[in-house]
Image 1 (tube, one colour):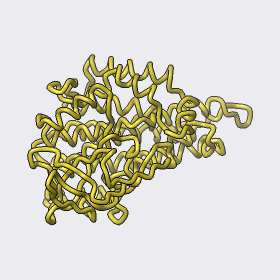
Image 2 (cartoon, rainbow, N blue to C red; image 1 turned 45 degrees about the horizontal axis):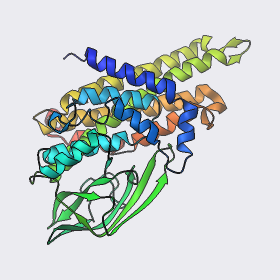
Image 3 (cartoon, rainbow, N blue to C red; image 1 turned 90 degrees about the vertical axis):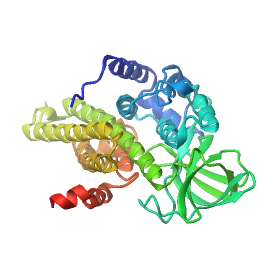
Image 4 (tube, rainbow, N blue to C red; image 1 turned 180 degrees about the horizontal axis):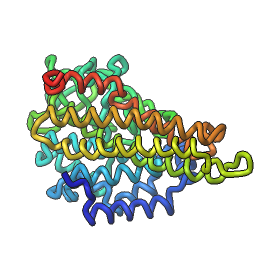
Length: 374
């Protein structure tokens, strides 16, 4: 299997990296985090001009019909720069609309607006009681004369307050169903807050909120699980970029910090440790690339196996790289004044989003292929 990026993918990654290096340095990022909104409309417009919002959208709706590998190269660059804009949330929302039926009139209209940068999306994965269970749903839907009414609570919805539309799962007659809810719908309460990694999240409370089904009926449990798998591999790709940045920052710091009159980068024991950090990141990269290749597999089992394997290895690598970076930075590694501490925080949140290492190990072990081999 060829995992080399195409010339177009390399050009996209290069253009995005140049923009972020020039305009989205650590200090600029911290200034955005401290604002009331927590995101930057200026940088979002730049992402639109770079074609990032149109990338995952089908060509029929004005997009570029980007593949999982196209999205992977973008998420790596965003992770490297610790970007706090709601790109991941919107990309996941786009995938949800595509799986539900991109050609339906309502979905097509939303996708065109996403491609043009006019609106943002978010998927409400979590409920207070659910932990990592996608199907532990207390939110209920009932049919009304002009659509559906939702009642329930969604917690830690990443960039929920910044989204114009939400993809929301709920129980309809006991079955899992997906709905689209507009930000300005009646019966919706939004509580926005900042998370420890500088991102934004929200608690959404629905009280007979107006909603619609987003497609042709293919919006049940299997579709919701596939959307979560897509979101998971994008997070893994973001983590790769963050680990690359953290490894680079650690090497550079050890070249400047001196002990016994020499840079600590010259100590063989520390060189070995930094080599291990690189190995962990590269192993995580291999499995994330495999997950991108397997996401579109016709076999749901192959997709689940690859996604969970990647999430496990990325989680393990993120923890090792983050902890070692803090150790090698010394006391500076836990201060808000250096990027390393914020990269570690972001990696910690990624590791616990949509299933931690233990959760995905259990999921992997429960798949028929693993049980048969055992």
